[in-house]
Length: 208
Image (cartoon, rainbow, N blue to C red; front, side, top):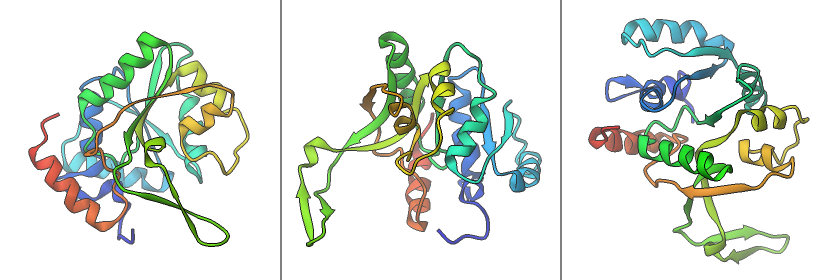
């Protein structure tokens, strides 16, 4: 999405996207680690002053890739407890979804990710054209993704491979299984300009 500033800093309903996200997490977690590109940290500090944003968080410099950024964050995790990894540009996440992921991870001792069933038909590109896939066997992966801190720290000691598209695939590469819990179709990721319009509508009626 071509924008004059990173999409996590775009303002929706009188507040930058990332602040909407942090407000929800602050309502149900003990600590927040915020990973940002080093080049945007001055901007972030200015935005906090401008919007009187005072939610406590630990700021960590990201890397060149998502993998490197999460790896940097894991160095600040404790050895015990659970951690949720979430995309800053999913500001419509609900407190209920976050708590559901943590609850299943804690009670069932599993690696948990939010995911939704496919609604649309799906096709896969092949060498000769396309092929329909059974959508009942497919899920749309979201965040938050919740893991034991020690599991995530160990997972990010691996070397990067292109198959690592999210934290679940990194953890899975160690032989760990992944449990899906019901996500929310409103938990959209802001990727294209129209997503901003949708997010604005969701946030207008959303509480927490």
